[in-house]
Amino acid sequence: MSRPNQLAAPLEATDRARARALKSKVRDRVSDVRRHLLALRTAMAEFGEDFDLGVFRAAYASEDPVELNHVKAVERGVDQLYNYIAELSAFGLELAELRGRRDETNARLDLETLRRAHVLSGELTSRLQRLRELRRLFAHEYATATAEQVHESALLVAGSFPAFYEAYREWIELGFRRGEAIGPR
Image (cartoon, rainbow, N blue to C red; front, side, top):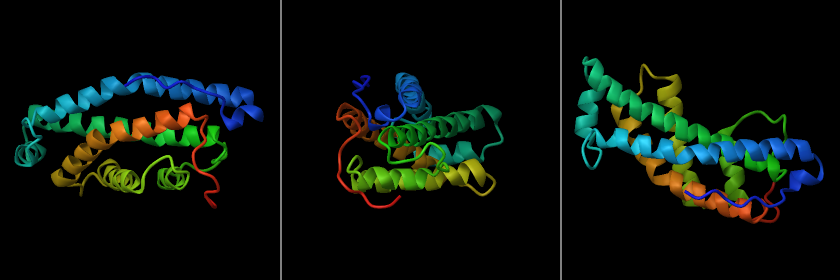
């Protein structure tokens, strides 16, 4: 994944220091993404070439710590990449002045704002919203999360992250400008 060219963002006109800090955070995340996506795909491959649900389900339920650690590697990979999606969304929206610096963190709203700003397609937004819901389950309701939910989340993030990144990169290259009026956040 290539690093996007960063043009002037709307926030630079009003708060150059904050814009510089946010751009630095974006660069840090973007430069770290590839290795985490490869690590997730490698962890998924531990469960067969096509990330077999049956094999994953057996490991998920296993008492064997080695098998369970393979599952945990998938969970952590999903969590890391989801967090990058949430952070990059928030940073970009603030740079575009579509989100305030002190706005409460809310990935659901941020993804929807990116859709309304014509950065993300409706279909990609739906997949990322599903990922957000699943990740919340196994990150915060882990006692009731299922192997199927973790498996689906891994497939979603591995399949959707490249499209998210490409749309995000294009948005940066356009100076964080895409859609016109997007309505209230």
